[in-house]
Length: 128
Image (cartoon, rainbow, N blue to C red):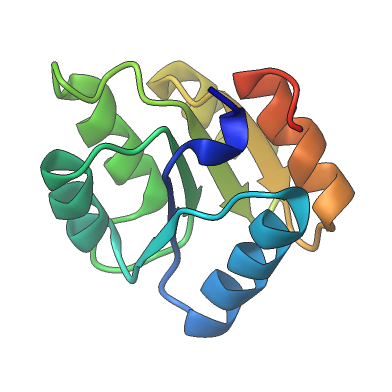
């Protein structure tokens, strides 16, 4: 099965950013893309669906991307879920916190389709 057949959940509290990431994923070849506006919504969708990848913003209310990651890693059914964190800040302590919580990769905004593709390939293997 091709990596691009996986269902991807894009989590961000800004609809514009969700749309940008969705468009980049489409450019790379992904077709099954779902969105969530916050961590709690994302967690409910993850528990109800069968996703192959989560791309989540760090800075959200009321549940941050880091809190979402910790919830995913604590859930027996979801703990192996590939998880990529997106952030506007490249603070070392954020990167360390995300790594300690079990993030698979990390992207700093702004980014393009090529960067997103490389980050996804480092987690899932070759695309296309």
